[in-house]
Amino acid sequence: VGRRLLLLAEAVTSSDPPEVLMSRTVATPLCLAAPPAPPKRQLLTSKSGGAASGTRFRAVSYNILSEIYATGQMYPYTDFWALQFDYRFKNLQRELAGVDGDVVCLQEVQSDHYGSHVAPFMASLGYDGQYKQKTRDAMGMAGKVDGCAVFWKRSRVQVVEGYAVEFNELARRQAEEMGMDPRKDDTAHYLNRLQKDNVAQITVLEFIDPSTRAPLPSGRLCVVNTHFYSNKDHPDIKLWQAWQLVSAVESYAVPQNLPVLLCGDLNSTPTSAVYDLLSNRAVHPGHPDLGPTPSDLFPPLDRLTHSLPLRSAYATVTGDEPPFTNYTGGFVGCLDYMFYTDPSLRPLSVAAVHQEDDIKEYGRALPNTQFSSDHCLMMADMCLGGR
Image 1 (cartoon, rainbow, N blue to C red):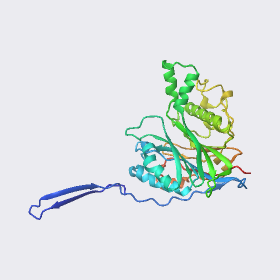
Image 2: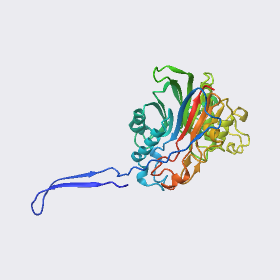
Image 3: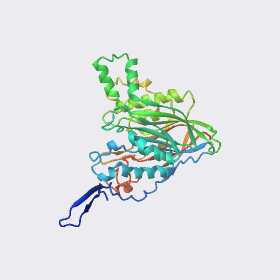
């Protein structure tokens, strides 16, 4: 296990000494044993009980760890062969097939793997999908760029419309609105601070009757999938991204009265200004992420707001966010979320994250031979419409 085999075959004569007539060498892929089935995750049910009517569906959000980031330098405690994408994808396939989501939001989907692995596999399970890669150049060969992908089960859901959000473009627009001269150094510095290549997807889905393909009366759903900037030393950039995203979603969803499901890796803990803005519609004036002086990235705090009644599915069901959704050798904490607009959407249950004992049975942290991402898959059973 964890080794390649080198096979050498030679055709020789019977003379003494023998003469080599032909030689061929074949190298095999890594010889890997399949890991055992992962332990079942507990389904935690809302204390308020299930909804009597409306459309029930299962939503999934998962940062699957792109190959370009799954390196021995980043994860020195993980066996090198367990970082190989072909091995990891087998585990990821098993997880995604096992949860059987109706709407699936994925982050860190590598561009070349979306076409060669992820999209074909999801299609084999009955999903259609859309992909948006980050707005930067590939890391080496073509396709070595990660992005976001959203999938929907075609037997239950159909897409109405969708578009991508490029935070780089939003930064350029903001600079123009502020009257900044693109030829000046301070403008270049301003844009360099904000342009981190992150993206988001806004997709309007419609639940349908599987037999007639007619839309169900529960209406449409606006699904938002994103992955924020990862640098822990720049909470202001993440807050700017959160503000820009909710502003875009607000201007799109509110006029159409669309319920919103916002999923993703926000690279922000529950104590962050990002979480404050999303869950409380504003940021507390004394929040440490704001820094000691007013930032030129945001409007005054009384305008750093939104009107979306967002609540966290996990916090609603369990009373708190999970103790972690990212578990590595250098960090353990909650970075991934599933927000919904209340009361048009309601969470009925959520899947508990991995137990620490289950993680450490297969290694020091994530990823390991059993769990092939450094993040935990998030899952929520939701109800759209009804009472």
